[in-house]
Image: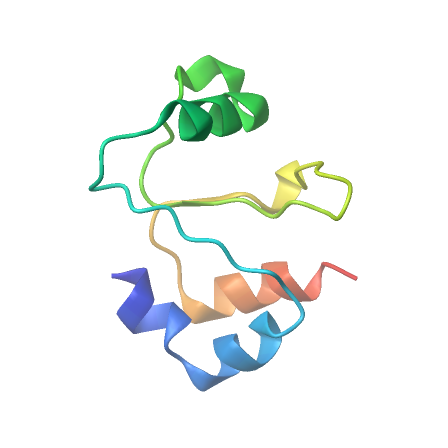
Amino acid sequence: MLERTVFAHPEFKREAQRFVLFKVDASAPPTDDLIRLVQKYDPSTNGQLPLPTVLFINSKGVELLALRVVGVRSLEDFLEKMQQVS
């Protein structure tokens, strides 16, 4: 859903050039590495996050918690959050 409504939009693509984007295929069985990574950013989840979840992680590996997106959001919501990252 987000791929069609947000991520494919030219405004999102333009703003996203400032970021390194990673996508996790949630339809594939989770690997141990993926479970450890998810637990690093949200230990309460036992290696699972609600879908979709978008994390903003700075260059030091620290998540910008105030910017986390859970659930389907509008293009405007994503752009607003992305623009808060300097």
